[in-house]
Image (cartoon, rainbow, N blue to C red):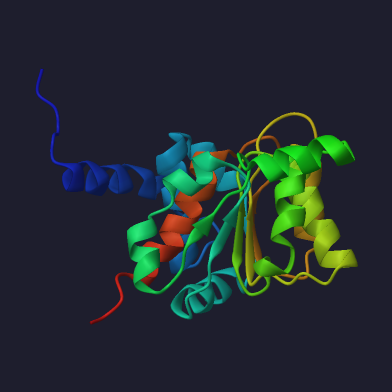
Length: 211
């Protein structure tokens, strides 16, 4: 069986096959690149009907990356999927505390999820940073609480938790009430690969830092 083996050609061909699904959609050129990456990561063109991108999201994320902002994630799968080498060229790092013993203890003591405890531990470290939630709706709910009650101010939020309990509601809340620019996916769709693909799309648009 003959098949494409070159990774660059696979990506080029994939994007060419995805492009018709976005024809006529209300996305600008930068947003098309993001949605294309999401569809590529999910293998599901229907995502084009569900991705929501705040008008200031791309500019806010790009500015944050260029000034060396860090990224704070809810789960290791998001952290692992992010292209850390390019981010590091700008001085940024990716953080996740879901497996931290102190976070596990805090979660047990306070009767909350570990992702909530991790975000409480991050606190104001997220000011000016990019936050990427790909798995846990409770992390997005907690981030919103921190933004509303403790004045935590991320530069931009990628909020795409997946599932049937709280996922759609947490993303509706983000889209309707967030005081930070965001990218989200309506409904139950989402997940860690989607969060990572959105961040990587933003990163690829900026490209490697010039020497």
